[in-house]
Length: 464
Image (cartoon, rainbow, N blue to C red):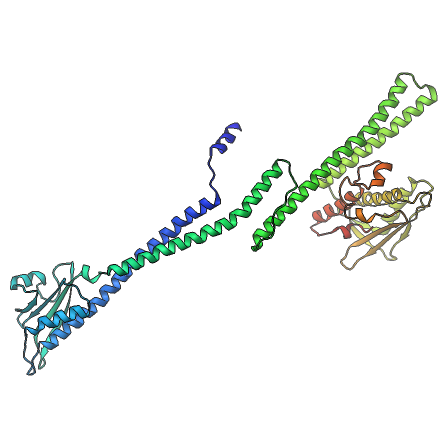
């Protein structure tokens, strides 16, 4: 384990800004350079094709001007000037050769001047194409009175045909560089935009790991995803802070609630053992110790049950139950454990049979928790009256409503009554317990619904 930690510490981490800008620059630079090379090659091919067409037109013009009015072959020195004029007009290079041959293939004209032997070296044996692969040739026949009087061949090097002016290359290079810089600047600004909220979240997470939960983030962002990220993290920090506070309250409550019966039991047993009390009084002390031990056992069982419910490891049955007899039996058994200050709950049940699907033991646990809460909230010196109503709602759920004439829930506590270990200030001083009755009443139906593949909410679990 230590070896892995040291290895992770030695590993260098790169910021989002550096990571993405460098890689994006390499990707976009490579892509644009490849695009530029392909485009440059395509421009050269197009330039070669266009210049060869121009060369063929020049060869045809020279052939037309080499025929006199009577149709005979007439090669004049004026062709030199014509060729020079056309080279300037069509922006042709100096690497061009014009050859005019007669009917038998004899050399009649050339520019630049060459011998018969040199002409044979430049053209192939049939005199209709260039001999060297570095040159391309365009030809035109000299026609007069329907007869072939000769042939014009214009040769140009492939290098000159593919030639692209330096100005165009410079402009194209500047355009590519500009696109690379613009693309890099775009991803750079985007990386900064994304890195800032992530850095804030990382800084807040570091503070949370150090035990500081009071985190305030600027959640206002134009981007929906970033806004949701910051808002969710802010809410998570608030829930962690609330959880930490609840944990501290829970530990304090657990310590207090467990310490009191343990101290009482220890004192009672010690008094009996030391002979401080004897006879019937000693028996009373032991009875009180047993009651405290039983109360302590129930508190531990409640705590274990809630933890099991919260973890979702409690087995839930899905029996088909008849609601009316079940509720009557639950109320009857509960009333046997109460004193005379609690009236028998008035049941408002449907006239027709209503069947449920659930766990009878868990339903009893929920209702007993709710009824016990009503007893704890009764008005001092006043008879507690309870109403329990069963009805079916349009969504197909059975709604059980428990009402009483007790003190009610203060407005400031209504938002927290379903929190685990929460008790109002009055109950903290007068009653002993964990504050798990209502959270369990909500948690049990929720676990049942999840196990059944249904969705449920607090209002469908119990109506107070």
